[in-house]
Image 1 (cartoon, rainbow, N blue to C red):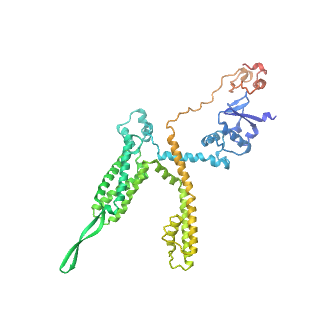
Image 2: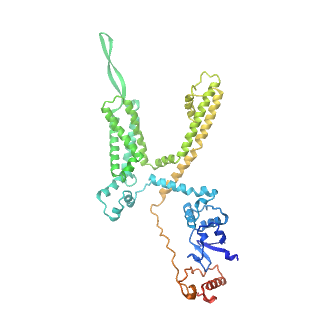
Image 3: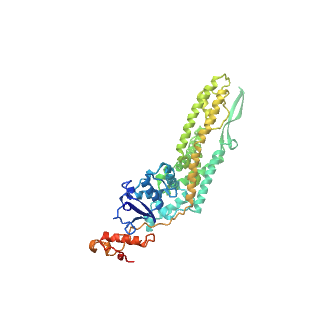
Length: 494
């Protein structure tokens, strides 16, 4: 009969009815192995009960019927994956029309993982988090923390966690102040009004009997005040670096951090410059050139600015798009440099600026990046046509990857703002208890002859209002006949 081939599945309070043959279409899954011996089968209601998400199960059952798995837009991605895993289905079978929407949660999870690594928290970490970071969890819970282990996290928070206390904010402000002063000193000492001429006496022989002298400006040097400013700034940088290294929870991770490498190299460049100056190293221009490393101290501001961290990560996340942009720019530069070189040679052009293809490369770079210095311009009609194509190609080449980079920045920034508003302490949910065995049922629920273990069935839904009394009695009679009891409505005890 048709009724015997149908099966009723109750998922989260919503009843679904389908054919048993439909559930056999996808073998080795939970629904394909339904039997009446399962604990979640209710013989009274003749249904299987699962305390799972009913919205996802609608798509799961539709997958058995049509062979196409669609993603419900009102369900979070991890919940959908968890439900598919429970029903024994593969999440990779989602239809292409829903794949982009379904995989958005994976990008979100990757972004949140990156934000965790960037350490953008602006709140004071808990004592338990600090103990976990320094590997003293056992001492923390036992209450036997040595003096240095108690002092080390406090000093570390003072220099590395600007938002942990007011004192840490003061230290962070001092660090930013010295960075700004050091950069300003580095820039201002190159100004002509901030430099002191190095003058020497030169003897001049006017005639064999007449000798005079004159002053000659050999070179200029930075004012002496800048040296003392650099000494004070680098004294602070040295003190800060040493303290942060001593109290860091992991010395190896501290030394390989890019910001710390920049800080170390910039600080050492000052001492090397000072020692070479004491050794009367004559080539001062080379010393000043290598002192440009100190300008990299600007990257130290990333420790105090979450926005800079997000911006740097955006460029890392957009590495493929940036690589593609550079590739097409190089391709266009070489092509248009070659074209404009030969285009300017077609007609008589005595004022030709493009004497070679390498010279044309500079013109192609300036044109494709829409800078246009005007130092080199094509003067023939063919060259002007090539220049117009070069400008259009540059606009299109640069404009295409930019929205992807902007989208990556907006996504990371929006997630960081939402993450900052989340409560740090979430309410814990207790794990689901195992299915308990129901109370013993009357004698007709035992095996033949009234003996044997009681049948583990869910009997508390007898009074379901959707089932008439007649159907209920018929169901009880069928159960009694199958279990060896006497049929009849008198077996029902209300």
